[in-house]
Image 1: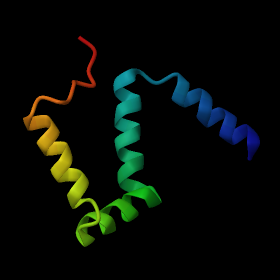
Image 2 (image 1 turned 45 degrees about the horizontal axis):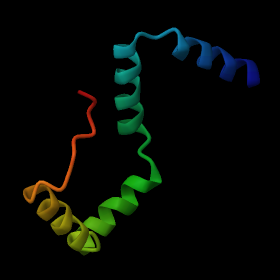
Image 3 (image 1 turned 180 degrees about the horizontal axis):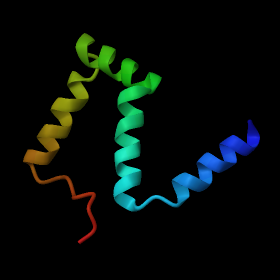
Length: 70
């Protein structure tokens, strides 16, 4: 089992950036993380509404900055 995991790790390391992105998207669809379910239930229950409103307000008032590097 360990050598199979090591083989998989080596194969992933050999992927191009685009191939790794495609693999990540596939894994996310096939094996969603538990956090995804928790986030979805919190959103549906309205537990994040106040935070979302504050973020939108901050954005509208110019109190945010881009996460992208210039």
